[in-house]
Length: 386
Image 1 (cartoon, rainbow, N blue to C red):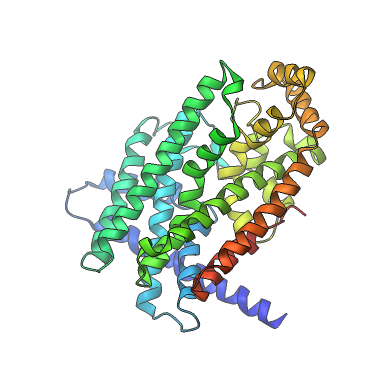
Image 2: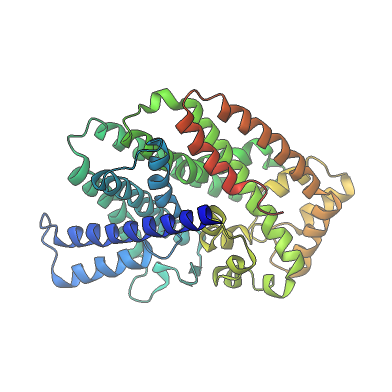
């Protein structure tokens, strides 16, 4: 009990420190005289940063700090080291804000994190596209200020550029696949689904925080290729788990789920959901609200591709006739089919197998500190639906 309380206090201290670093970074960006922003532009950037970078649980960013501390293997990081870890964490939060602004526009979304999407504000509109690009460019400015001259500076830029490329490529694949799926649902396959989730979510949510921590601790990412594979596999597993959780929740709280994205984005999920960091973060509205309408939005989801390889002709007709329609009756038929196919049992078997494989792969890592980082990620997400 005392150890748990101490851990919570430590997490709270880290979060408070992390939040203060944001204010420092924002103030520096607003003082940047390289362009000569006038007062109107400065007020815009100030409001845009607070609206889009803040608001989530910040766990991707905090994971950098926590992973770095584990990699230190018992020795407490200096104030300077923790500050730099926080900056790298905020780089990920800036990157996510850039992704989400553009994703909302592409998906014609209404809300994000319980409030109107940035582009939906009357004064903003499609200026939001440029705001997303500004956010992405600010990462480079922040990193140049604090990491230029560090031995890992080039590797750090390469890491962010590579993850940016993978994530935007995953978004492209998702958009194109959905468009093609509307014409021919048989194009949705397990391999296609894995590629979408791997590139769109797993790299920036799971690999990037650890990659940052490894670079800060003096490691070479070329020496941790297997670590990357493990984290990406965790990201895929987690995304599947979230989908199953939403379907499970919708079956037990139909009154809430009828409102779909609006209720999910108002925080209902969090109150019915889990207590730990990762599901409070990656299971928050920025993910949950999207997945909650996979059926209506014609998305290539894990449930759909698993159903497609198990249906008989009668069931296939039901699936194809009702998938991609917003009519609640059609959605209900698809969910009933998922239940008839016992996809929860399919997931349980997958979960058992993937956990055993991940544990085996983690324990094969020669570095015990790296093992500790990987196990901390896995233990936060494993079987949290139970």
